[in-house]
Length: 254
Length: 65
Image 1 (tube, rainbow over the protein chains, first blue to last red):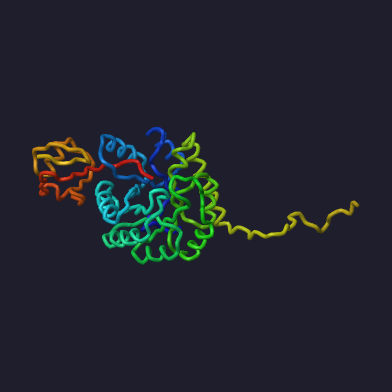
Image 2: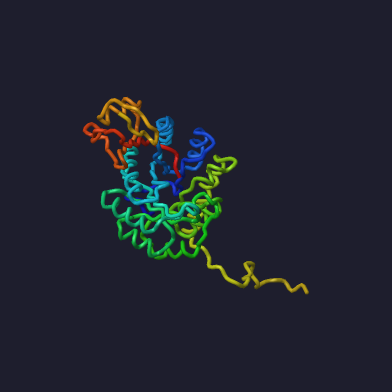
């Protein structure tokens, strides 16, 4: 398994911590998912932060702080520094948002911020698009993991550009790749894993399901199924039928 | 002295950031601080002096995707 900045993860599912109906359901969903990584954020302390942090620590998972909502390089870099201190980890899910409606990354700001943070010793997990040239620039900037989107954050649309994601996998065989954002259903997570991705990161699909705990389990199974399928070397699809039952030996009954 | 804490106007008496945080009730809390948009690490709080009109951000762990 490709490692994430020297860390081998038992689970290929990374799960967000936002939008659950309650802290108890969040914790139960995490246990059901078997996820080894939890994404978290930093926000103005209004009284709830300390209890939330205690809850996350009890989960016993690795924490991946994000720079969600940052639109500029300066904001993202400052947030990353603050996150490194609070969460005591060099891991950072780097988001530099370029557009409010699609929440798609600003590729130019992303590369600039990634370079600053990588030079400063951060383990940068960039939230990016499936663009190959951008991927190249991010690696050049010091990223050792790439996290292309499946679809816009929170949309649940799945893998919008299957071809692009496949091309990215083919071009960077050594780089750990995570489909981050846009997944709505376990089948879409399985599909990402079937493409050879190393992990998937999702939040809304579990948190906003009618039964988040059951959905967390469903994603865990899908991720495992997709990974097994990829490792099992799937058949090539073909346009014409090919009988699976032997033709030889068929009785003459006409 | 008037400062802005997380976007809200506040009156504080201590100029030192460590003391200001205690005064504002963040004494033992796990928080990160920024003054006027620049990160102030824990180690620098003792020497960081606040001035009238400064913008203090006090951030804590929160839910995220």
